[in-house]
Image 1: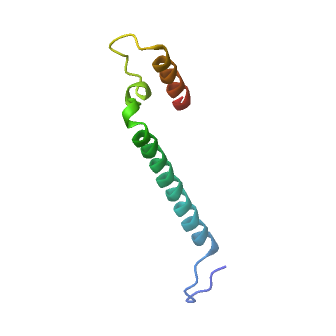
Image 2 (image 1 turned 180 degrees about the horizontal axis):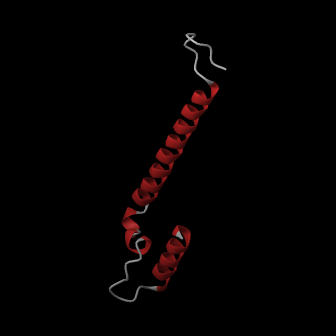
Image 3 (image 1 turned 180 degrees about the vertical axis):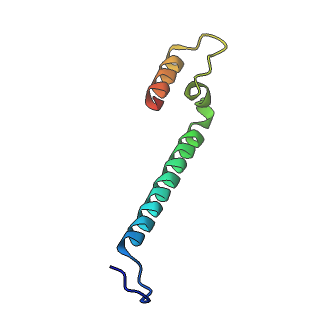
Length: 75
């Protein structure tokens, strides 16, 4: 209950602020995780398999397995 003129926040207003800050925190952490994975594997050419761009030539066996694993993890 809110008292008129007391300057106190209603409990619903406090809960919404906490929910929004938690949601924003989760979004930032998820974006940092995605950026970190792409940064970590930048030399392994992870962008082509994750965007499902077809290779120009038939890849070696382990590169094909890597592409399948990346696509399975994203889906």
